[in-house]
Length: 118
Image (tube, rainbow, N blue to C red; front, top):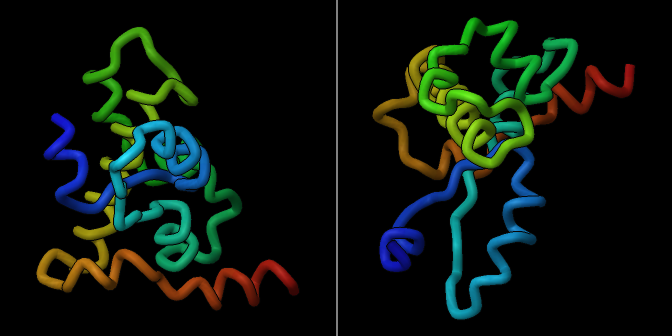
């Protein structure tokens, strides 16, 4: 398991909390990070809310919940599955399946920032 954790990108919605938690594993350099919050802000800058729950609800992404019965938002497993569902939807909707992973690592959120300050 430890070997697998260091072999690819880690997906999280607002990755700050996860980064702080995973620092407790000395000797592991987790990342790079795919932050679905930043991706959502770039992909859908006009959404009223970019919270994970609000995005999943507005985009009709609820199928992941069957894999986390008895759990809800802010539960690590539930949020991880929701983040993956959101990423899968975003990649599909924006035809990013053949794009390099770098496209997902540093999304352009400039439109969201402009909208926010209007």
